[in-house]
Image (tube, rainbow, N blue to C red):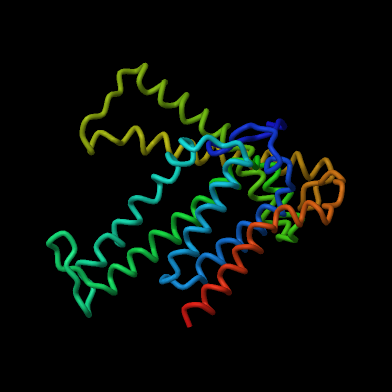
Amino acid sequence: MSGAHTHALYVHGHSGVHSLPAQCKLVAQLAFVFAVVATPREALWAFALYAAMLLVAIRLAELPFGFVAKRLVFEVPFLLFAVMLPFIGRGERVDVLGLSLSREGLWGAWNIFAKATLGLGASIVVAATTTMPQFLRGFERLRMPKAFTSTLSFMIRYFDVIADDMRRMKVARQSRGYDPRWLWQARAVATSAGALFIRSYERGERVHLAMLSRGFTGSLPSADEVPVSAAEWLAALAVPLLAASICVIAWLVTS
């Protein structure tokens, strides 16, 4: 459990984006998303520039475009509401392919689609180039509460342990001929979940007592790191600063 933990979205690589400190990428992502959300929906050219910037970031991170496209599918269920807006929206109607659609609804659907896709794309780039330990160190560097980072660290470390317990219990049930087909046959699953909860709670108590006996004071020790240089901050913030400039110009043009 002491090794480096990755996650499903992480892509191992040695690009410049991978080497940037996590706190720089987190701040850059947040600033970029704020700039995108603040952009007026009528500024179509601004969103085209944002998309181009995101594609450049994906290329610099050496991420396969297919990998990013597959992860963008995650937003499809959330865009179903946006698809309905042109049909249920009020106000002026326009004919599109023989359908009477609300103009305001069309703008609303576009607004949701463009901003959600760009925000999710930026999140995928950050997640694909940052491991979990780097995320935790980044949160610490950004002065997140120690209780939050410590709890998150323990959750990540013991997630694999609990998942392995669940797999072993499933194999044990199946080896005893358990093959539920109806809802009322799920009693064994509920019993297993209760046993797993008790076992995890007891393990947590034992680990906590062992840590207290070794001098644990409520926060995990962090290794000394080299301070982030101005060049690294500038490299990470180049995209959000450009996005903020585009947002300001978009408001000046549309106003």
